[in-house]
Image (cartoon, rainbow, N blue to C red; front, side):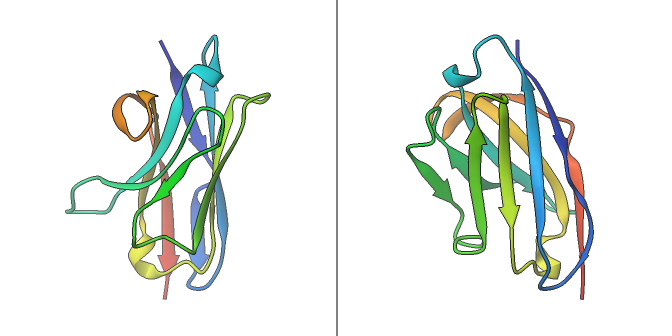
Length: 119
């Protein structure tokens, strides 16, 4: 069982930055690969970024590549999403999720945190 709690969302102007955090309550955080997803109103949830259990591999969607950075601190059981150069189209609820396999099979999800980017 993995419990995930996101934080760090908020309202920011276009061009600004936010850092999201996802704290995991789990016996062995290093056993999990982690991902960030987002869902905008009226749209399906979409993949944003993923990081392997040891931070050795990362993946990004084309829409955020070069602007967002995923990282993790296994000592703190936390994964981060640094979001720079934010655009209004980044507005969404952001979710973190865990998986036993890198990039697929996400089976535990957080409750989400709202990010709103104003133009």
